[in-house]
Image (cartoon, rainbow, N blue to C red):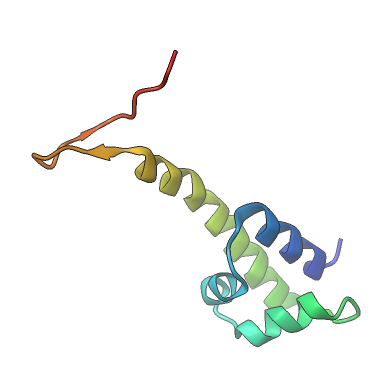
Length: 86
């Protein structure tokens, strides 16, 4: 699988935008969009490695972000877990 396909699948699954991925990878967003828009384009292996590492890092942050968004804040600043319907 080429890096363009990997990026497309990652963005579709996570709902991140190309600019988030570019920032996490430390490369220009234009570089990512060029690879996304032109199936014949590829990127240097060093940049592909940066993008793959960024995708892995962002993937690891998703469960934590979801847990934080589900935690309810009480008026006194303490938190409680959300109650699930049985």
